[in-house]
Amino acid sequence: MTGRLEGKVAIITGGGGAMGGAQSRRFAAEGAAVCVADVNLDAAQALVKEIEASGGKAIAAQLDVRQADRWAEVVDQTESIFGPVSVLCNNAGANFRVGFEEQTEEQWRTIMDIGLTGAFLGIKAVVPSMRKAGQGVILNMGSLAAIRPGGGSPAYAAQKMGMVGLTRSAAHSYAKDNVRCVIISPGHVDTPFIRGNNPHSPNDWSTSIDNPDNFNRRLSGTPLGRLQTPDDIANAFLFAATDEAAMVTGSMITVDGGAGM
Ligand SMILES: NC(=O)c1ccc[n+]([C@@H]2O[C@H](COP(=O)([O-])OP(=O)(O)OC[C@H]3O[C@@H](n4cnc5c(N)ncnc54)[C@H](O)[C@@H]3O)[C@@H](O)[C@H]2O)c1
Image 1 (cartoon, rainbow, N blue to C red):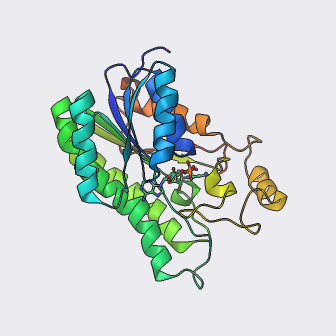
Image 2: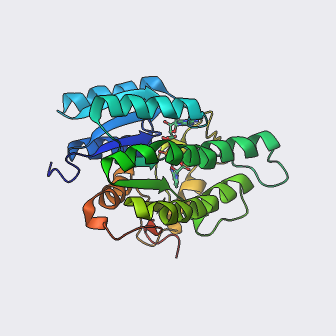
Image 3: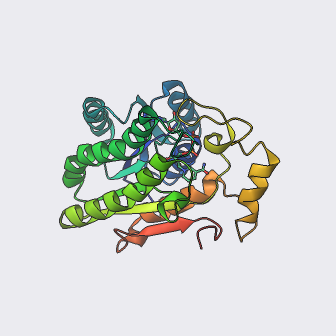
């Protein structure tokens, strides 16, 4: 622990998941007070116990990022316990891995609502708190789909490309408030999102990386020769959240082993 985030207060959505969880652990270990926010309260609470057992400061909040009223409550709760919010990590996302012909309107709306509208609502909810803090950093979760979306899920392509626009819009709008906004794009990260079968990201044998064909296709598309871990991505989130990145805003950091080249 080196205290790189000492004094910061972070809300991390999808905090009960793999990448949000790695960020929550890492940020708390570096001195931040963390609100682990997830629609899955059990997962968020389990992580908070773990962080507290390691001497970190954290609270759990049940948050469906699609609900503006819950965003307001979560920001208020975090602020009343830890003080004004200075970091927001928008991780919550969804995908249904079917192409244009098969993707339903409901699937489209779910992907866009959780990934893009959820991040928009989060930014609107935290900026007033960041103004009180006198500074802020908003970190949006990108993807290879934010660089070169292929012919898979159209809503996922639109959501992640949309995240680039949202990041630049927030970076322009809030620079005057000393608030930065950065998008961080992982490559293939070995998490339940691409391995498991969860309601927000269903996989079966045809899509899961449990299937060696799917795993090896991703591996061979990664020049550095391995899939990423949630910690690889948390390291970039950490850098972007610190004052070492004081002049980084509106930009994308890729952490993909070269997969997006
Ligand atoms: N795993 C990969 O290869 C990969 C690569 C690039 C980008 N991503 C992105 O990373 C993000 C997180 O993925 P992960 O790999 O950690 O997956 P994960 O499934 O482990 O985590 C996702 C978390 O989001 C939560 N969540 C789902 N719907 C929510 C909602 N409406 N409100 C709040 N929380 C909600 C889930 O409960 C879960 O804890 C997603 O945005 C995904 O698109 C993943």
